[in-house]
Length: 132
Image (tube, rainbow, N blue to C red; front, side):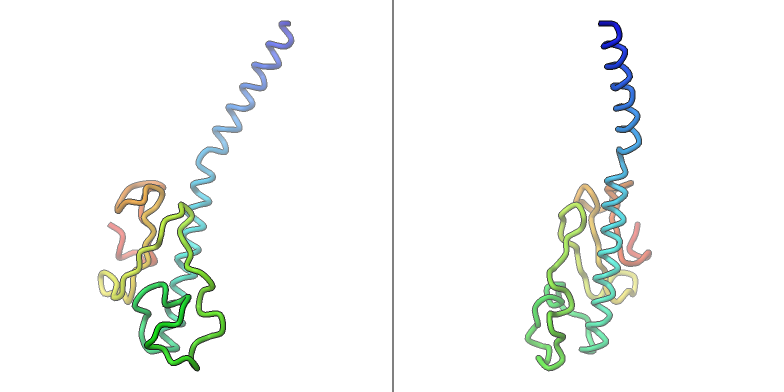
């Protein structure tokens, strides 16, 4: 019986160590994934502008051809196959023109889905001038 108790205690200690080491890695991965998506969207916005001489009015215009675009200039499959969400399943905010003389803003509101915040709740922008 004592041996069983020792094994249970050892397993409990191992579980605690694993939980402490793994906790937070999921949020780091979500933040990194969201930053990668912001870069991807920004790249497609620049390509859209290069092809059509202006940035799209809304992010959906990267997926479905807007009426102001000449159909012969529209790439097969669009610029994005679907509109991505950040890794916390929130919609990205898109503004054109952007803040502080930037051509556009792409913003993820982070884990909490609200403006501002710190740590994983901090907003993720496509440029540094939008951060507070």
